[in-house]
Image (cartoon, rainbow over all chains, first blue to last red; front, side, top):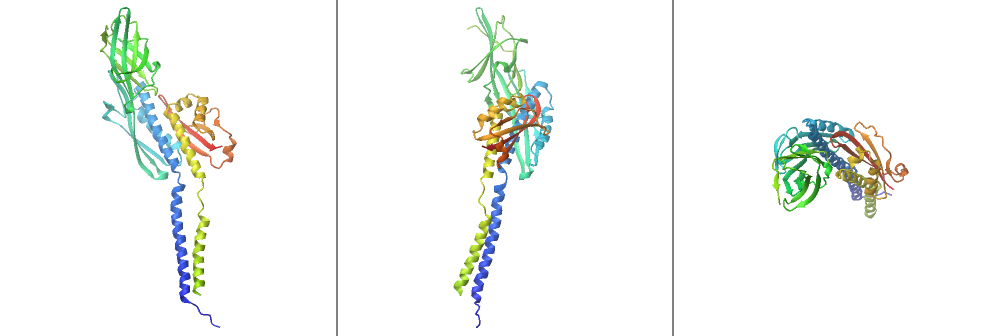
Length: 262
Length: 137
């Protein structure tokens, strides 16, 4: 008996086998592609990125606080150089590469002209005084192929003497100085206590004082009213030293103390 | 005869698809769980830092306040253990800053670790590396 072999039937089987091989191959490639991205630690990368960004801002704060106390013009550059090394050590395996450039020259920000030197600036002993730091940082995360992530960090503290008046009514004589305080973003600083006003000088002499905080419709702003009691004669000058909760200092000065006899 | 061949061809295709299913396991919820804890841990540390409390607690050795701040920030079923190191990775001596049954850290397969770096406080640059381990109880 002779077995008849159907050639068309063999073709169907071969076609099915080829189709199966194609299905397996394509599925393997698609599955590999999808799972590669699912297995990456994206959340960890994002948190590392965010943490470095926030902490870098804190480095600028610390440097500005130090600069406002010591007047060391190199402090921001030195701190950031150290910061670059410490960040690498804190996140081993991420391939963190941080670099920075410091603001230099005149920048206009928050309503004032800021003349930076090595990322730091201060203008003190005027009715409007401020301390500022500014740097641009560049972050690479080699482990995830992220390069060229840039962010700018600014730290700013501004104090403005809105008015200074000597009140003389019968036996009650005092000086009231009205100041407003802002930080970066032109946000009013509303959490200052008496201890943040480190020194109040009238005619160059340190004085005891009290502080009140309220919203003033006259100045359309949150105002700190600093009152110095028992002043015998109208002072010619007033000087206020402010150290905010971040440790950043600024000093405002006015020689325009008005007399109020109302 | 053609019917038998068609059936054989179908079997080959079905076998191939079944073979793929053997390897295509359903995604485990473990990485997602770890990822959520990581995000939660970082957000909590970031929030306390934004309030300018984290640096004060760490540099002022206010360990009890730090523990309390973390306890109230995390859900009650999230256990934590915080260690603090200097920039060179040397541990800073401090009382245990932890919450929950610490045995769970050894037995659980999804312990999350969050690293947060503090550069310093006020005018002093003295970095501290915070390593926060988290697990669901």
